[in-house]
Image (cartoon, rainbow, N blue to C red; front, side, top):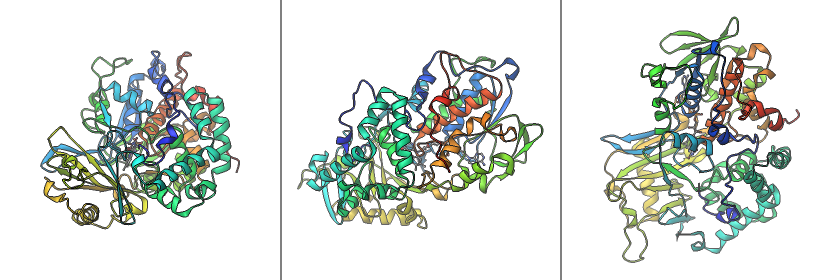
Length: 562
Ligand SMILES: Cc1cc2nc3c(=O)[nH]c(=O)nc-3n(C[C@H](O)[C@H](O)[C@H](O)COP(=O)(O)OP(=O)(O)OC[C@H]3O[C@@H](n4cnc5c(N)ncnc54)[C@H](O)[C@@H]3O)c2cc1C
């Protein structure tokens, strides 16, 4: 998300060495690993064709299945809902050609493993119209009933520049921001770890809000309030105030919030294309094999039961009552599924991992989209000479409104409201129509002369991820004190460290990622699980291209003492 306030924080980047999502917890170069001509490794021929269950057909599951197939395994994907999971692009009723991004919709170029796959399936990206971004014609910040129109940060009143400076100063003084970004640019894993391990030990118990309060630069309550309402990111970061500050530092250190791109044709195209794609290089399988051909067109249905069977197998029961047994399985759905919708054997994980799954904290998130006849927002108001409607950040119910043009004069889409946590819960009991009415009323208070409704050409689409039966939340967000849980879940793929009876089931996906809420983490953790499965079957990586498990001892995440 392009920063509404602290764009200045990123001015010193050396464009030759981009900041990427390299660490800070586990500084492994997933992008180099993927790009290397030696590939991700090889398995003994005896393992060719071995079935491996992949539970969840979101991005993580599809990446894991795709790479397992390339290695010669036979992945068996189970998906309860749609391929793509939280990369869900939905067409409007009667207008399936116009898409709404119900889940992930903007991707930082620092997501280099994600971009590897986008490139490999030939998907294009375009700048996403975030607040004050270059691609955004104009932005309105509307707080406490007062609106400001801006094209750049400099157009906003001085207090916003003060807040930007306060955030920059806080990051420098309390989190060694420039040092860390330089180390990430240089891919200097030793320095990254030295800085990060110190921050983890200092701040695991601190909320985002507490971190701000302890900063002299944020002594003013008003500054903290403005920062929360429109601060870094696309606004609404006050909904993250109760989360661990470590979650926020990961985002700013790795430029996850910068220079966002949208995927032309919709985010869901990525998992769908990987599902259909015939890889260029693959062992064992005949030419033309793809995930879709291995599955006869569709994945298997929802998993309803998971248990261990002798000698060291994972037995999976699905919604059709089909029972199948695998020597290995990769679980990529949200962890809460293991607590309710899937009947589980206690021996699936050690008790410490169960505790980590139980303590998982999700952010809720709601969105509502309407399709409109054209991108009318760049029409000029004859009196003010301004765009009639702008990307809008407000403390009203809508919080963030995004204007998404389509083709030149063709239809376009407005995300009338995008909210998280408590702001999302405010929408939960409201029907689609009730949501629409409240949103239009909020926006008409900001734009009294604009009739948005007259441009709407089909019914709205809305979602509250906390109400989706196969998700139960939008994405994980660790609370203070959760670092230990996160470390346990992320490192679960290093199964030689577990007693033998707990091996063979690998956790991957957004829940396990250090950067939950960013698709890059879903990809990275899929690659960890693939390495884990390869290792279990006696496979190995090429010495010229070591994998995450090979590098683990050198760059393992800090273990905090109990
Ligand atoms: C509102 C929202 C906004 C986001 N914005 C961004 C963004 O702008 N940029 C970004 O990079 N990332 C964003 N993300 C995060 C991104 O979408 C995720 O990181 C990524 O899609 C997660 O992929 P995954 O495969 O780990 O999980 P999922 O996509 O959740 O896949 C898990 C799959 O498991 C399936 N499943 C559940 N239970 C079962 C079962 N019992 N049996 C079989 N299958 C089951 C689910 O249906 C799902 O398809 C956003 C997410 C949300 C929700």
